[in-house]
Image 1 (cartoon, rainbow, N blue to C red):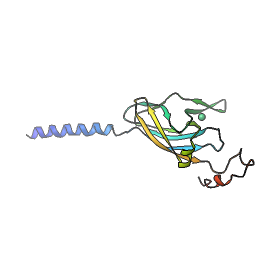
Image 2: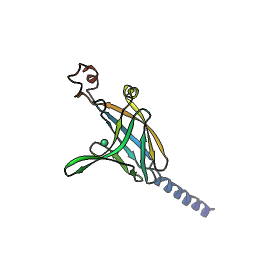
Image 3: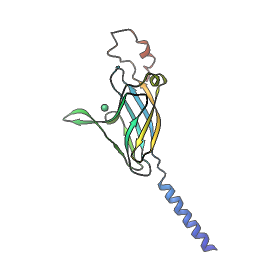
Image 4: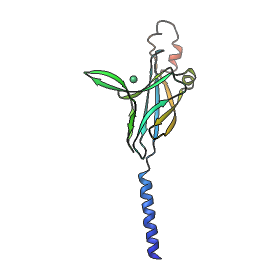
Amino acid sequence: MKKQLSIFFASLAVIFLSACGQGDVLRVDDVVINLSPVDGNPSSGYMTIHGGPDDVSLVSVIADDVMRMEMHETVEKDGMAQMQSLKEVPVPAGEKVKFEPGGKHLMIWGVGGGSIHRGSLRMIFIFSNDDRIQVDGVIKQIGGAKPEKADADADASDTAEDSTS
Ligand SMILES: [Cu+2]
C-alpha cells in the first residue's frame, strides 16, 4: 500500500512538472496605434507578443476597419533608416517579441473614422499555428502637430483635446 502511494505521488509530481513547462501562453498586449497627424499618411502600430509553449510565427495582422495593414521593420543601411516589409515574424516559445519605434512596426493605412472616434481598433493577429488572437488596439492621436493643416484652416480645436498624450 505504501509503495503504491509513493508511485502515485511520483506520477503526480511529473504531471505538475510538465504543466509548469507549458505555463507560457501565446498572447499579444500593449497594442498601440499612433495615428498619423497627416491625412493619407500611414499610421504606425506597436505591441508586445509573448511566445507560447511552441515556436510560432506571426503571419498576418488584419482589421476590418482599415484599408491596408503591413508588417515592417526599420533597418539601417549605410547610415540611412529604411523600411522593409516582413512576410512573417518568428515568435520563439516563451520569448517576448516587441514591435516598437525604430524596429518592427505595423504600417496602417486608412484607419476608419468610427475606430478613431472610439479610440480603439479591433485587430486580429494570425499565427502560423492557426491561433487567431483578437485585441483592441488603443488609438493615440499625436498631440499638436498637424503640419499640412496648420495654416490652411483654424481647426486647432480638435488637436488641442489630445495634446496631453
Ligand atoms: Cu513602415
